[in-house]
Length: 209
Image (tube, rainbow, N blue to C red; front, side, top):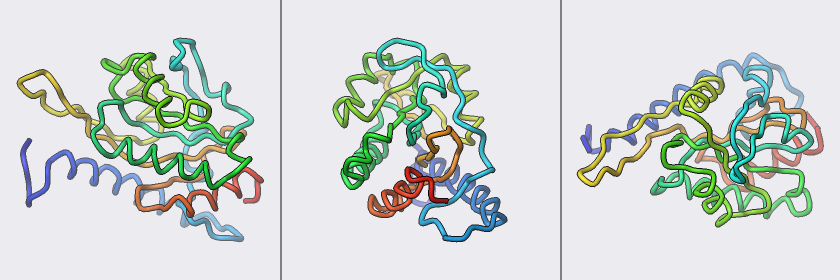
């Protein structure tokens, strides 16, 4: 893998994509007055509602309406991810642990950016290793994934294959928070602690904006 200034290209792409996304959303959020500041980045009114048609990790079709009534934590990743994805999933599981009984009102939606390898079974096993009760893996065609990623300003790119045919996928690492009505509300990054995320999630769950 090529390097620039001592950093892997994939890391530079990931950081650049995330920085651009957060900078744009933060600028938009700054225009929205609010009585009490959020710990996370507010994207209320600046991203579309949770709307998609994909395949769940049980092989059945699912859409955005399938998760109405629960707060959704949407993350774009892939099962072969060596570091960022498992770290993010682990952090979100910690968040659920801090919510206590309110964790029942939350679902983690792990949307693959590698549909070629991430079959429903692969996703089922992956998310199940973290939390089979609160997490669900979602996949679809290349076109479906590309369209959905564009909808929420998620950047991803398949890296060059190694001699064995293996490859990594560079992708944004933000977590999108949608309320029980499917409205986009917050954006969490890998700099936000489980305590910080849990604090804002409680407000979303209780609908205290």
